[in-house]
Length: 108
Image (cartoon, rainbow, N blue to C red; front, side, top):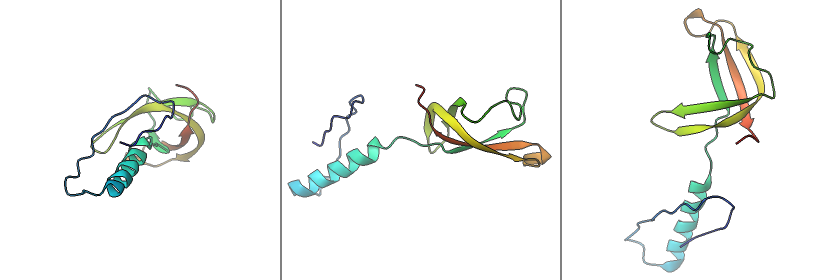
């Protein structure tokens, strides 16, 4: 067992290592797994294509935006703050696009 009070909801997980019998090794493995699981997903950049729902330039630096990413690698739904953006006039299919650079938001 490797627990820590961090103010977040309790998340349980079972680490199954039947080949390891040393208590010290098991403790180290459990600690490493807890630290790995505690890392929150980070989305630091997204690409926006010019679209009526999100026209280029409809945001400002400092805006909080909701980002949803659902694919084979990550399920992420959270708020991020725009800290910079770069215009790319000829992106995919010659369409205008922008890269938004993001950081953690204080919004929940």
